[in-house]
Amino acid sequence: MTETRAELKAITFDLDDTLWDNQGVMLATEQGHYQWLLAALDDWRRTRGESALTLSLDGGLADYLERRQALARATPERRGDFTWLRLRALEAQLEAAGLGRSAAILWAGAAMNEFHRLRVQVTPHAEAPEILEALGQRYRLAAITNGNIHLKRQPLAAYFSVAVAAGELFTPKPDPHAFLHVLERLEVAPENAMHVGDSWEEDVLPASALGMHAVWIAPEGDRALPERVYRIDHIRRLPALIERLGR
Image 1 (cartoon, rainbow, N blue to C red):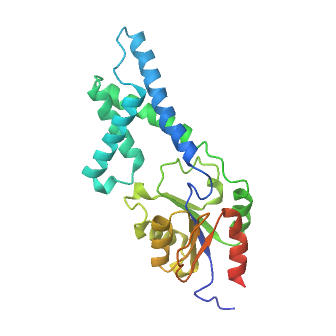
Image 2: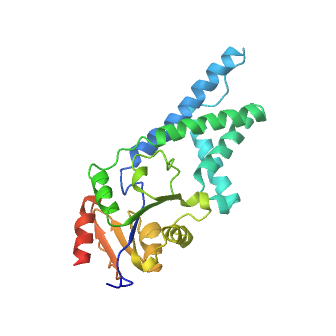
Image 3: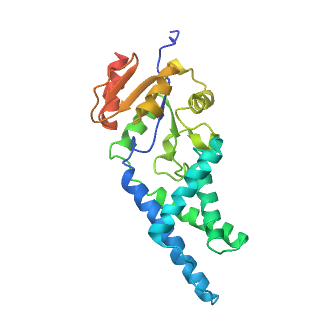
């Protein structure tokens, strides 16, 4: 039988706060990698007979954030490339604190390795693996994230044939090009695809504007939903929604 243009062929997913709760992980990662850096630097300088740097946890983190924000304003094309922003901000901060350029680059890179080690320690919603396993039997699955989690090391990586960090493409959501890039790689037209995410502005609106189905994961919401936009309160409701749409 000839397929209709409306037939669902692919589903794309946001990751953070869609397939797992991210707030606690990000807080632990933010503080953890910086604490690691300060402790490791102190040990290193002590073995060299050098005094500790004057960076503190609270003051250093605040300065680190300000440097990232300033970099994002100065280089708007990199505003969504969070790994690049963090790396460059750390390098600049460490140089300003007294490290030579080479040492600053090495230690900033080491701190980002620790960041990524902590960042992937997310716990997917209990239902997520089974849902993705089942959906993967029927649809092509992909991930589109604005976050800088290491995509190949995150715990659900095996379920996605395509996964992109939109900021690293210089097209952070809601830029539609990240969606179009993924759909091109999946060889699926927008009208034959669905995007699932927790952000109205970054997930629902751009996907809907392209003609995709869009599923908004929000515990509460009183917005009037456009055509082909649906709200569920948790990823566990997704299979029933897709089944209902199929009927």
